[in-house]
Length: 623
Image (cartoon, rainbow, N blue to C red; front, side, top):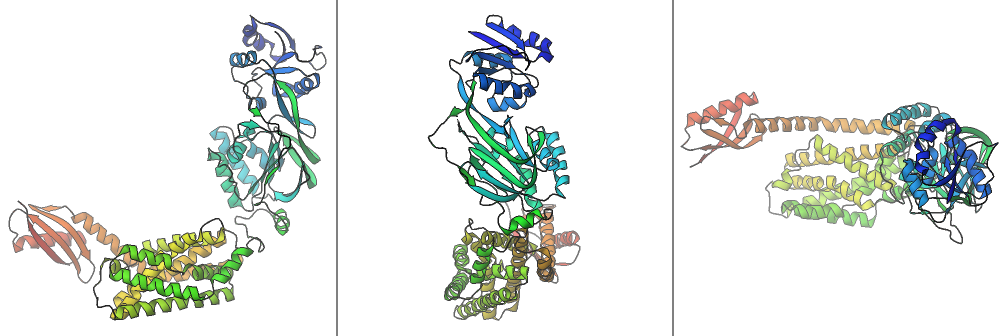
């Protein structure tokens, strides 16, 4: 078997030193590659190429034309071709792989406007897309290109594109850029986004980057830089994927594009696959599939369309995209329906309140959780948040009336059940809802975010948001009803403050979440957000005081628990705020404790607290 070697004449010394010694026991002839002085070789000649990428762009069309069987030897300037044909990095391993091939395999070649493509074709603003394409390098290079990418984005708009597939399917959209590769492994980002397959198909993979806001760009960058694995079948809203045999891309003006990093301009870009064009001596290429009819795949549901295209190409990207009413029509319709008072809402409200009240009296957390699941308060609260955000008077009025009706019913039935129940002791479950703090406001905010997100996303179970919101609302209302029934205004006020804390926190968080998801322009949402912040600020005053008291209590407990005064050990410290503060402790001793010793303990605690206290001490003999 005789090999013909075409090598880089500009690096003859390196070739003689590193490549020729590998062929000492083989029959070969070698020629410096020169387009004007190529040897005349018959079909199916085994031609080994030790060339740079620049020379390979010229040599491979010749191999296709003359039907050579080609093998690739690693060259210092062979960069793009490594990934396309999976060439070993060591020359000895590459030659061993070539020697093991009995029959060359047929490989596809990708072209762009009839120019050969090894890696990818990228369309878009060169100053933006060039650093984006180079983020597959080392960490420092990634960070430098990230800074360049973000800086260029400040003034970037999306471009209008019209894409026509091999089956004449037309896609009109707006995009920041488009990347086209033959195999998904052609770049790190396409591999992580689309995933790798174990077989080759004679198709192109086009990834369309179409963010509607700078926040989506941040998501894209984080994914590109730090994601390690593709989520098969999952594409974010700002990406589209088209898989087809050929693709024609046009714009409203001349297109800027690059082939393997080389910048070009054209009126249109035509990409195609030359099927089974090249005979390759390799065992490392993926298995090839040639079905009778290749199927196109299009995942473009999240791409801009209709009126939104004109909006996105006319101005730089905003930090937050304000959704087109047509795109969120279903969400608005659902929220308007949820804002109304219905028979099922009233029935579930009564049942949830009664169940919560029984659970509170029984001191049973599972029963209270059951009431949380039944509660229908999610619907009017989320609708109210949207009404506040968009300053929609009708939506605020209807949802407010529904919410008020639910509150009145909860207080009424909670009070009635309390009046016929002969229990008047504050147990753990009731007492846990009498002293709200900033932590309870945090629960409300998280619940509001969950509720808004679930209502805006059809693929998220809305029942989850209902549970999250009910957790924060139904039990406090039931405890408020118990306080009315007992005529205990301390119980009523503490629980109702918790209810109001959660209500305003949920409304604020849900409105802010809808704003971030683009359901309202900021100039319209500003008034509602400010009003919500004012209510949260007012409610937060007692919460801050209660939280500060809780921190002080924990500080006292931490300082005293387990401490010793001579042979006395202090255990089970509890602090009850009042005037003066009451501190309850258990004193462990091996002998009876005299009154003077207890005074010593009281003095120590007062020095720790910094104020007079009332001491409740229990003496325990330890032997």
